[in-house]
Length: 387
Image 1 (cartoon, one colour):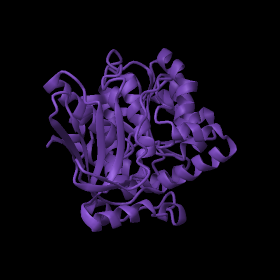
Image 2 (image 1 turned 90 degrees about the vertical axis):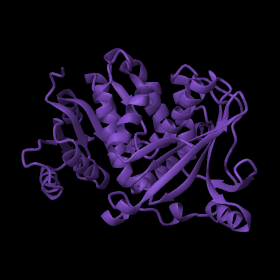
Image 3 (image 1 turned 90 degrees about the horizontal axis):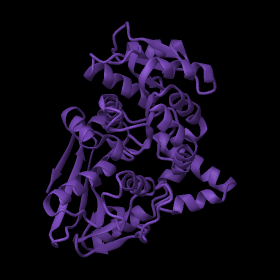
Image 4 (image 1 turned 60 degrees about the vertical axis):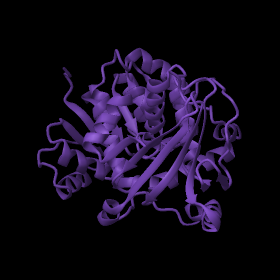
């Protein structure tokens, strides 16, 4: 049993997404020993009262620019949930504190260059201290990473072999990307301008795979008509990070999907001329760059509640049979579903023995696997099914 004061601390609890995480924990997991952390005690008090959390919910004053406060925070808890991004601006001091304290950590990072830094700088030490650092525990990349894992486990169960070529395709989605996602994108582009090697990391689907390089992967960068799916497909904005995470998962799982594994992600837009027009519209959409959401702002509760998404993962088994898995969520992806997913990821991690998942820097599937699928299905409004 844990001897630490808290099971989970939410760092960034006064931000838009952090507030949703705190609200979810208060409502859905009242038996968990948790605390809210942020820069301002006054704001923490206000948010605690506004979200209806118990009046005795502990509050912790901590700041990314104050290493002593982060050290104290990390030493008091089993796991930290952080929503404070962009992570390449604010994230590494907390990772350092968690690694040093042997504390588990989950974030919402979709910044591949920073993730590469964290792997290179902290994976070895995390293995020594036992800290499990699990990156990308929101819409990027839990539904995609676990969707491929779910499909491959079923393929191996049926045929004894994984599927060598998997297509991830967003079939339905209603909702908005978060302001944090936009800010992270711009920070990544800014850094790439200063450090040219970052562009190579962004282009390389295996840049997070610990030196492994597999076969050439599809680019997914332009609209295509896919005969096997009977639909046009358009580029999907989050493929850049999801594809890298899925290849890292494969590497950390001992290449359970095979060393010849090929994967890409796109968005289905339908057949015929209408499908082609929509695919071209999506491909040419510049709204994320020209009118991005602002960090700290987000959709209304009604918009979050009426959002949804559905992603399919499909390929042929070694016997030539098509196998399709579908992952669906019941809230908007960037906020409503993300706040639930990261919460359940932290709670799953805390319950996962270190013999099963030892210290290191992880993606969700190799760290949490079927246990997280089960929790998300029970608590977070996600479904995983074979179609």
